[in-house]
Amino acid sequence: MAQRAPGKHYRKGMTIRQLLAMFPDDAAAEAWFVKVRWPHGIACPHCGSVKVGEVKNRKPAPYRCRDCRKFFSVKTKTLMHSSNLGLQTWAIAYYLLATGIKGTSSMKLHRDLGITQKTAWFLAHRIRETWKYQQEPYIGPVEVDEAYIGGKESNKHASKRRNDGRGPVGKTAVIGVKDRTTNQIGAQVLSRTDKESLQGAVKARTDKGAVVYTDEHKGYSGLPNRETVKHSVGQYVNGQAHTNGIESFWALLKRGYYGTYHQMSRKHLDRYVTEFAGRHNDRRSSTLGQMAIMVQGADCKRLRYRDLVG
Image 1: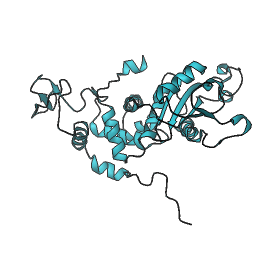
Image 2: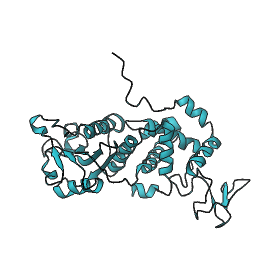
Image 3: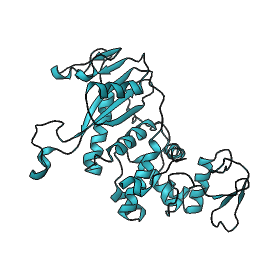
Image 4: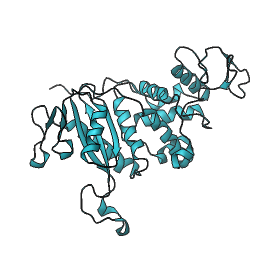
């Protein structure tokens, strides 16, 4: 019997040695960032003009627009805007978050990049913003399921236990929609799990004619083209109806929760969910391709520290 190759064996990866050879310093990293951000030539991020000149002493910035006369760099008007970190550090951070399928903690970034844990935490959250983008409605069929993220009540200090029961008590609800056709996943945190909230999230991500596979949760009752599996009686596959794909995604997210991050605050949980969904959606690309997608996703976005913690 022939040995099966790993699921993503066709992807072109990148070793750490290759990474450091490609980005030996900030200058090499800058050349790559410029090429990825402006594949058709450098354009002013302020006015869009292509009439750009290089500043010989690179002060106050390496480029100057001849139309609006403003100075700029490859960081300008991106998530790297106003960052004091070198571009080599940013490139390595992109690599670590792209390849860490179970997530990359701020403590690991702190140790690997030689920066403070606080800076690493802020850096990681800015990179997570790159995975926030508008998706076309899924044509289906789609799998829909919800998960509950949070620590176990039994592991909490007695003063923090809610003592309201088991299961989702004290946890935050997250809904996920997976398109079987494209293998794309959309997930988001929910404040409630009532019928209106669940169905609203599903309808926002799916085409009107899409077949929807769910479990027997009453909140999905009334969805058009819905087929169900009854988990309560041990049924996990009913013809084409099952939610195994989206449940596999939840399993990976929870491994990241317990094994990498150990705790995800309710305030920032949606950012971590976006990270895992975005990385899943880009997994068909090579490692360098994933990094390029993330860099392009950073364009025209901004996340300031005071807004993150405010």
